Image (cartoon, rainbow, N blue to C red; front, top):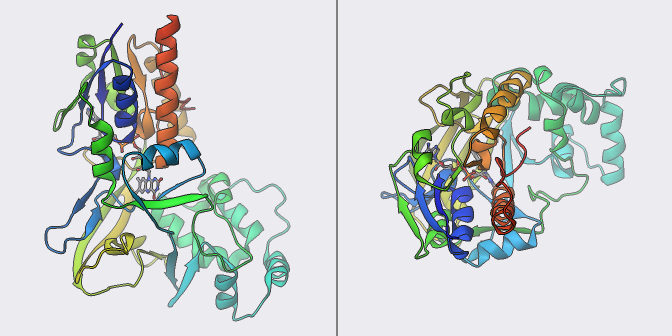
Length: 383
Ligand SMILES: Cc1cc2nc3c(=O)[nH]c(=O)nc-3n(C[C@H](O)[C@H](O)[C@H](O)COP(=O)(O)OP(=O)(O)OC[C@H]3O[C@@H](n4cnc5c(N)ncnc54)[C@H](O)[C@@H]3O)c2cc1C
């Protein structure tokens, strides 16, 4: 039996689930509150410079997931792209993630890999046996000098709190390399869609059984008109924030343009606490196969998210998780809604994980329909 599905959100979650439901004979209506598709991955050309801009911040595609890589490549051409991040701190420019070059440059040394490993171990705080906070984790593994130069100031600016208040798990994800590999990601596949993410998502949504409506916010009351809603907006927003708001960090982007090449790389971080921005992105470097005389840059600032701001990074500290558990209870009682994606499950998700979860979610739903069991309330457990 064909279902009438509503996708609330035309980002990757809504598009990928919607496409699979349409491919399997279901009618799909996609609505997004914004005037464009693509969600936070949206890209568009800057009218002044012609540069392809990542409107909601820089997005680099990277994955180890063969099916996800094949999936995105079936909708667009990907160009090879490796993310190489630099950071300006204490009046010098270093490469990130911390690698042998960073260590040798910072300490004025010429260490080889094993020597660097031993050197860092000698500077680490080995009295910390069970690191609990971000700060303890950093002090244990890289020592105070590298921690203060590369992590402390940046983290305070990014999260608006002391690294002593953040869990150690955040830093566990940041590798230190004892070689000169400055490729930011470890994944097998890495690249950029040749014409940006929005044309790719446009093709995912290009199906005779899919209709797309923009500047069209979905409300809870509309769920009654559909067999199934896949909601990729904020979970607390679905319930009109009735239990309170989940905490997010938002970003402000200060745009500026330049003739020529302003910083020589796509992303420059700023580690010093007295520089108010966290990083500057020069968008034309994300498409090195294009030539533009002009350049468009974003100076990026992080701050607490207010009611009228765009929610970017879920905070997920103890208080937020307690509130999230209450919203999860409400969500599981909704008769015909599946909460999906980064906002629907209140988690930071890279694009490849978003697509993986969306594919799995659609398959689970199709399977449940085939055998007559209930559809899931979430594409993945939020807690
Ligand atoms: C600053 C930043 C940088 C990132 N960089 C990378 C990167 O380099 N590599 C990577 O892999 N990932 C990156 N990501 C993650 C990436 O943005 C997400 O994986 C992806 O956007 C998740 O897609 P989504 O569809 O779940 O959510 P979104 O893209 O947020 O889409 C949700 C959509 O739902 C719409 N919506 C919300 N509420 C409603 C409503 N009530 N009715 C209708 N529409 C609604 C919104 O307008 C939005 O368009 C980054 C994220 C951020 C914040």
